[in-house]
Length: 460
Image 1 (cartoon, helix red, strand yellow):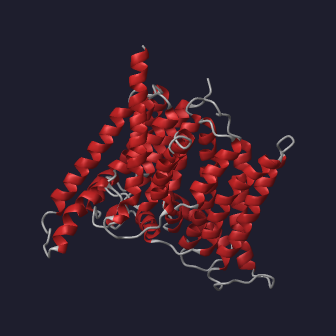
Image 2 (image 1 turned 120 degrees about the vertical axis):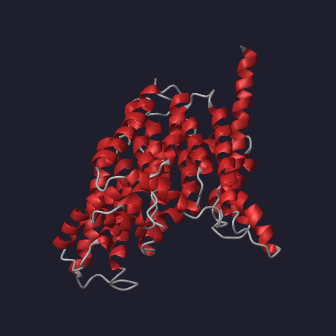
Image 3 (image 1 turned 180 degrees about the vertical axis):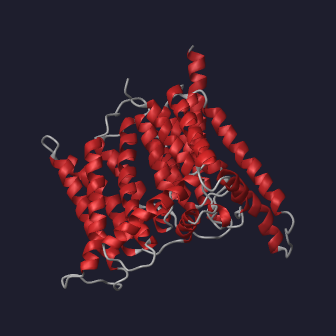
């Protein structure tokens, strides 16, 4: 039986939007290359394609909302107000993509990993930190972008900026999908069409982690959308749900935590889909991918990355590390030689906290709630949790506003504000506001779950 508010995704409409997005993205480049006298640029010829991209994507976004809205029978004022609220986060993302178009350090790491693979060497020789799949996808896609660049007459010796342009545009598509899936999540948990649209729009419009995700060209929205799609389809297509989470886990390893959600909810087909597809893909990479040994390189290389040293790292590891380091630094001391033990203590605390949350989840079967809690656990157990990772807390925030907003608006509102509303800064201990907000919501949900379990036991 479908969960309340759960309906089929309109796949033909979604594919149509994807095709129009691709046409708009290429169209912006083509118009830039044509350079007719009726176009100009604010920041010069180098930035002009991004401004043109903003125009094409805005036309697509507005046209999509009008097209979808007019297909409804007798649309009224509330219907169009909801459509406008759906449109606002996408327009905000388009603005950011159009205005800020500088490849980030993260992006250069993706490119470095892909170029290493194209050259026949390991992607883990420099700063690439992810499982092999992302670098492999970039390496596979690059020759096609090279052909596109040659077809458009772009004279660059390499066409990685063309890949960046497409990736930058792709972030808008991801924001649109996030908006759709969060709205469906809110509807499944009792919010009206208009209220769901208002809640999601507010969360996405005032959202520093989302802004940082786009600005730093991060993969967090892809991971989030794969998980949200898995939760949306778990009733109708449980095997597909498992496959989607397996793909997310091959982009960043942390989504393997979602296996707990499937097990607790007794969604065995989804659990086996995650295990089998994720394992099969890893085995193919180990046995057939070149160069060999990439997974071993990943596990050797990832722990070398800095952990705990930056105040904006909102992980428990970072908090514990700096609770010791900062007082010693203030007294003129030095923790040289203690970094390793402090990080180990922080990791033990992170894993312990994650285990406590998972143990409190085991008696619930609501996959939306379990999946949202697992996304929050990913933030808890990660050794490094930058501000942009906190987009993974969006589903739990939607559920919190739907369930506890009417009865505890101040508590939920403060937690959401701490995670999304405040900008990023590096001031100890104030920079840990996102972690505080997350812990507030987790405590609220865990306490509610314990009370429900006790009440059910008493009634039985």
